[in-house]
Length: 613
Image (cartoon, rainbow, N blue to C red):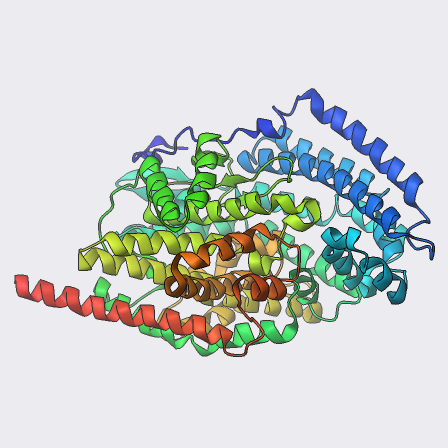
């Protein structure tokens, strides 16, 4: 990569994670030892429990022992897979990392062959027998896991078929997901900046879309499109293959609609989801109002897609990683010292990988790994305010995952719908901390505009992405393999609903579906962001009203992990009823208030500028 691409230091250089709490490296002797132990435990589990789970003589004690043994083995698998995935994400261009990930996936598949019978035997038990077993208090801590397993009864195949599907996935869907990462994260985007020809990563080229210089934004958009189009053939093929794989799985598992499997895993019913998405779509006028304001603030006649993230303030100061850390920890501490203490661990113990480097996967995430270890945060920190917010977002995930470890492996993860709660809440804390301490109306306007754009991207855009996925999956099923232009058209159709007349989409923008990893790795993940953002807006308003009384309830909610259904935990821990028809609109009303505040602030700034003249 040309050095000129990184003339401004972010302070994140050299900030890489220490994965030794999992394994010291690919050559760590513990890896082979753990793989050997994994097979011994898995084979032993099958010998001990096969034929006993679907027996009318199954006792609560035997079931408890089986679940505890299964959880132990599953965590060992999770530890190996987590390490392999994190190493690969850190450098997708290293063939050794890819080969290691493939090997661990194959070994994990082999081990799972000896475990599959448990779930299949469990779902065969009569409801009467299950009710009798789950009524015993010794199974209370595993009850939700066992209940959720039963929910998949109509969608499970025979054991032989399940084994074949799991093994074939290593050379099927999992292989294509890895190929997507390797292709996308190793594209070099060529661009001429400040008179110098440069070769940028995906992270760096996307950062240009937030540059105050319109020429740079336009050049960044053009370069992004060129790089994607040069790889469109393989990326389109990957999308077609994985969408069709999803369709085949739905047919085999008797899921009627493309989103049904995701809704089941998210523990959300169609009615609640429909209410969420249609409520968002009914409020798209906010997007038009805001972009109309931004167009005036930027002083441009035509507002194109590459103008959406242009900063209102032309301050290009880099926020050093250390300063970003201080902002986040201070914001967390004001809410809860416990929250700040946990976040501090991530910095002190090198649980964060923040630098931008060749071969590193783009974007950001927090990986919870396993309860016996701890989460790791992954981001590409370039020094913009949005990077501070992204780091806060992922640390929110990390704290959620850290607190929920006490629930054990099966209950530590939450459905995607509530997985975004802590992350979005963390961002809100940082935003309000900045707004409270800032006195300059111009800077406050820039802050609220930036936050509105983040929320629009989290609420409205994620609904757009979900609608695009719906169109894509249905089109693939009805029309067969799709061309790049076919998918471009679906992308434009979905986006036009939100943009309306406020944003003019360029022909280049039609190609930008190609770089979004959620479509590949977690189909229909995106609506969970909308769910999480609107939920958090409501939770934050509760915090404003209740003050410190709210804090322990919130911490308890995070600590509960996935130990019960989201609607149950939210109602019992914080008193939120997501079944209430007006629930989503209340969150959207708070968002509309922020839009109104931006309009008022813009007038204040305008009056100050006129007065100075």
